[in-house]
Length: 106
Image 1: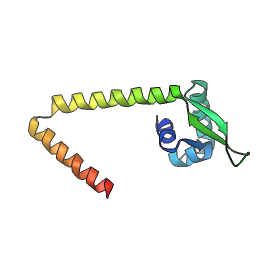
Image 2: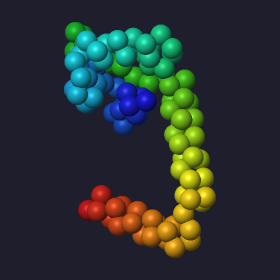
Image 3: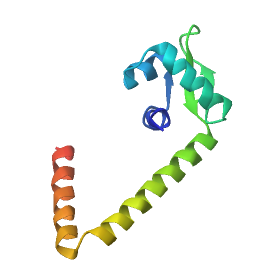
Image 4: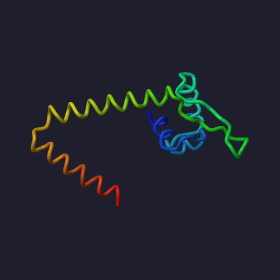
């Protein structure tokens, strides 16, 4: 999930860049990328300016899977908020999220 998310934000990355972003060894990331590639979720392509490097990018199947998982998480969170918080707590949560959004945007 996190690799697909990184590729969503960055379009394409090298295995080394993915490993650095995830704070893991490149060898470990190579195993993850290989598994994602075997499942059709990512693909490799040559780097446009450095022929020694290969970039990893998300496939359409990878995008669809990520979107499905994110939608499931969003549905779960909406259900939890609706069923476990009362109206006052939901208003407090909304205000807190507004404050967090303001901090992030500044």
